[in-house]
Length: 333
Image (cartoon, rainbow, N blue to C red; front, side, top):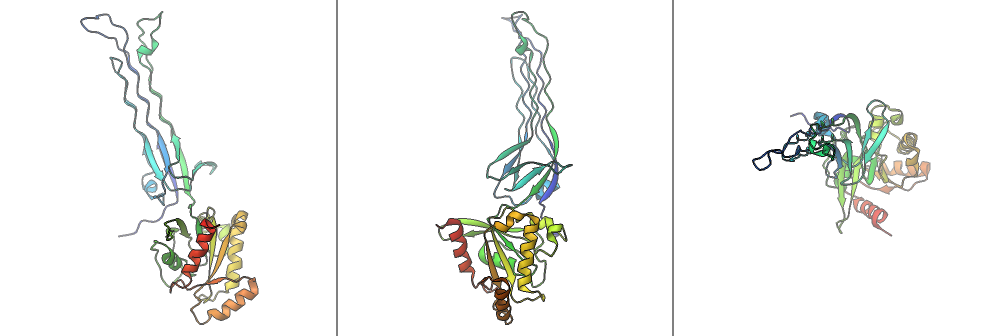
């Protein structure tokens, strides 16, 4: 079976419910043969609402069901019976979902908190029954109002992952292996580039049950900030990360220069969003169990002036130290 691909940018069409019609009716029974008006109001139409859900991590279902409708309001009836209100359609979306105009890409709003709700198509108002028109000079009104149509709108939804930590690195640097070692995530891991083609979230749970979310951002390539490859597709998921971890391959398995990798990664992030330059970060020297890593590490320190944390994600070495650093940063002093 072909796996379902990750969807983080979709266009949806929202049609809210119409309001029900009010009615003209007059009360009649054997005791009051000339009873007054008693036509009820129509019910309001249902609205379409986006709701932030931390347990939802993609927009897949909206990609496959882009047309969303809410229920119409019921019509009023005699004996002052009001029409039933239409049910709202509530769409659970991930935290970090941005709402845009589909034509201009103009920002409209965003979902950033659990339980936050935004009405994207408001239901129509129910019409008034003739009872509403009774007055001292009009004891038997014969007019009513129809319900108003529900709003019909199109939107572009774009997901920017709400992760506490973003893993940044070139393809085959070991980010997926590290995510597996730190969290409950189970990304595909293999010894060739681009095994991760979609952002993957994992949750790191500490001994006191506090937790943070870590995102494995697919491997970047040079020119990503200008849209080379899937540059913007990947980079926008880094924007909301409060802490960055640069995973550098010290084994240089793809004939890369680790120092150049670090400098180029920094450049790509800062070109895409200058604010990322001020984001707290940690540099990891991965695959230090390899024979060539020692020489590459010494050269890296010389060229960058940095003293990275040495780890081997594949062997689980250094992971406890990473956890200590992350806990101190998010929950320490």
